[in-house]
Image 1 (cartoon, one colour):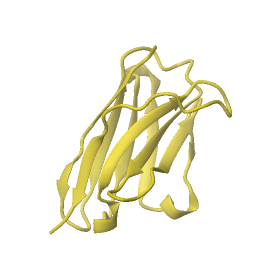
Image 2 (cartoon, one colour):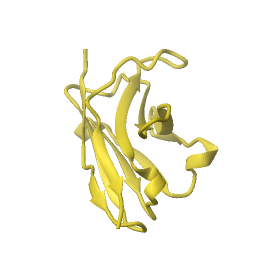
Image 3 (cartoon, one colour):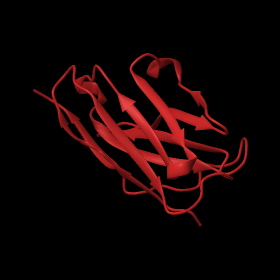
Image 4 (cartoon, helix red, strand yellow):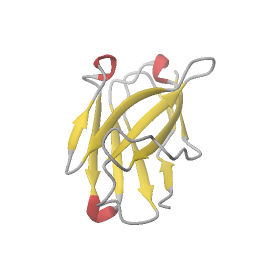
Length: 118
């Protein structure tokens, strides 16, 4: 199956920005949706954003305003642009895929660490 690899994490100061990349090992044209999740220490994993074919983003209410997800099928990649970062955004960020509408999210990669600290 298609594998996903996350990159772009790092250490950033509060108020800063980062762009995360989710790169697929194969063609993502047929994948219904790709999403970004995050998990902070001691907390449950939560959805940050997802993008369904052809390029329809979804953001939970708590994530609206500072995160932008985009999908580039020609690059087999999905990006998460994060701005005005806060310490509470510190987490491991994962991407996952949903092959069919309302299907399971069926792949967890290694994630990329984002740390927001001065």
